[in-house]
Image 1: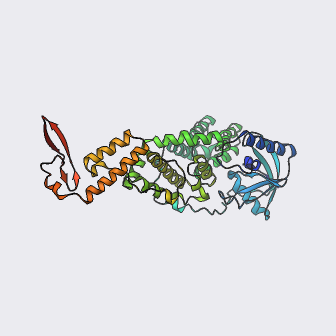
Image 2 (image 1 turned 180 degrees about the vertical axis):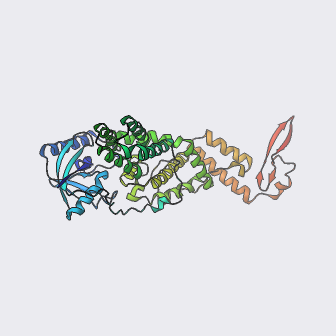
Image 3 (image 1 turned 135 degrees about the vertical axis):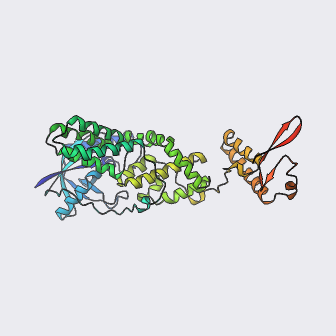
Length: 421
């Protein structure tokens, strides 16, 4: 009989039944979490592990219960192990005993389950999440320098150092692991999670104590990845830096061109895709920390994660330019795209007025001017008097194919026309 250790996380949800992912902790919620952790540490109750089909974020979640109430769930990095133990037992639930308790904000409990030795490679449990849509031809968040550095050092670790841990220098391995840690703190993809767990397992199996110690920073990163401080950093510092990056700005310009510079049309198209996010995540649009946390727990493949991040960033940039909040939209909220986005397609004076409004007017004034310009443009294009065309060579307004392409230049009291070819 072997002992299998499992991490129980999400204790703050067990202590605060109405707590929502991404919600800001209050003194009251923290006190209740500390009280539950202290009670578990003091009484060491029998813990029962069972499937949790009511979890709409992760359909394969396993809840942890004690003394008639939910105390948390099996951490997702231990989820497959727990499912394998359930399959081996032939029962619908597992009994576990408390090993130790971490009594801190969003603390955790380590439990031990007795069972047979597990196979080296666990078969992943079935998932009801269909990622096919997000692996299709969608806007893709460009690779960042940290991601490229992460993949570079992982290749070296996987092919040079980790297969020969008994022979290589500890400092060399540590150098590459430190680089991987530094560049992976923001990576919530399935591949990063799997790589982190694989590294921890390999290092802990080493004979050399110094090599085993190298697993500790990786374990700490895994434990803290979605605590409040790192999550806030992801949703602000990392997010804003990526929005400003030249790669994302280029993606943004390409997206605008693809949508004919019609931002409301682009927003509607983005939302038609985001409404298909698993876990009912569209309702959390505007709560970036909640979405990031949920995507991590949904075990999102990197290609799908990059597609979803690209759409969310394009949506954020679109909302900023439209001057609206980043929130879920209803069909009634999408406006007719009356933005004048290409002044050169209109009579020159109208284009100048719109360009002036873009930089000099507040939101309400800008919308009014844009609406008036739209009406004027429509009138000009649909009912342009033939008499004006006849005067094109002498009138200050030079009209070619329904467009004004000339400027009036005052020179010595005489009006001249400066033609633009």
